[in-house]
Image (tube, rainbow over all chains, first blue to last red; front, side, top):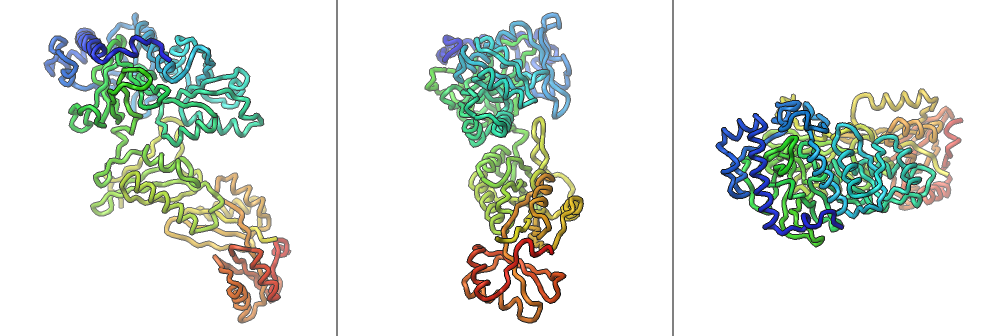
Length: 435
Length: 142
């Protein structure tokens, strides 16, 4: 299913020609309208006419989240407020929120992106879609909302919270598709099963999930629980919101809206552009955005780009599911460890809960990793040998996935901190003077 | 019928036992016997209480990792060799004991031993055949 077939299936040469033209426009636009960029570009000696090919993008200095924060709230806007029709902001869990503004054209472009990704995921104008993202400053809910309306679907702006009422709407309105974070979708399923209604009273067939990572194990839990087909999409408020890239029904990577966004992969340490097919940090340049254009924005997300055409017919580059965040990545005894890898091991093991904490310490000259996980299987509580077997199984599975020996600690239920927003699961004590 | 033992997974952290025992006290659950063994990081607390179902409920509500285990109780004369006879009976029947703990009762001259075996029925039969008293839940709290 396509929303804008001609654009979604352009050949690579056409895409690249369009991207180069738009990149030049964006560089020029930034230079003329944002003093911050003028300053940066002057220092780097880059002007739009020096960009001869897409490769020349490497001469432009990357933009970071700190740049947005330093210019809080509107310092990076390229348009006067008169032309800005919407403001969104990030949650601000790691500092001041980052604020973004949209012109009418930006909102139009945004809903195109979202309509495309929803169509690619299998949504149609026949779908009744419940949006269970929280509305508000967060881009997720309104982004999907307008995109799905543009596609022609029936949108139920249910928002998050009051799960039982959401489930009532779901039954009574015969909702066919759910927009939520994977963890909320799973929670809704748990609540649904605890109510006096049969799961047959629900009509969900499609899940359009995003805003946080989802391991394949967690995805199958959601799919089996709801009997739906789950797809993942990617975006962030700085770039626009959801809709930067998304999975098609083949679920073999997330298709970029390449007419609007230009992705690259760099080494997050050296900032060098990495050759095609390598894994590194994703950088994205907006190609048409007017409100707050971004040059080479450092997403901190670790992924890989694949330029091979997809079975679905789309020609846009695909990115792998985000493997982790460059600022979440732990380097332990020379091994790169992502919390998501540990999560996928834990989800696959019966008897322990999904919450975990990672503690990194230095013992002597060696870094150690401790994985704390809660015992939930009460059937084995009476037996040391069963608990030890469980501990060993987790340790062995982690060793296979991480290539690293770690200590596994089984702890009591409900003792690992729960997070309402983004989870902070890593406790790195290496630079602390412990004892 | 076996005896219902409460088993609780307890991390080695100050105050955990105090929390558990005060919860039981608040709910008027009487503890008749207990055993605790530990490893470096955690231990398993095993309790014989007046009302196992209630104990399990209140501990679960307090988010404890708790379960009920069916164990065997025997009554033996409080004289030298009393326990030896019972344990030899089980050994002769090829039944191995995972753990055991004992407590004395107000009932003069008798000691009770809680034992955990794989197969309660087989153990019970062997003990009864050897004329060893197997006790039931309600006999503990008289």
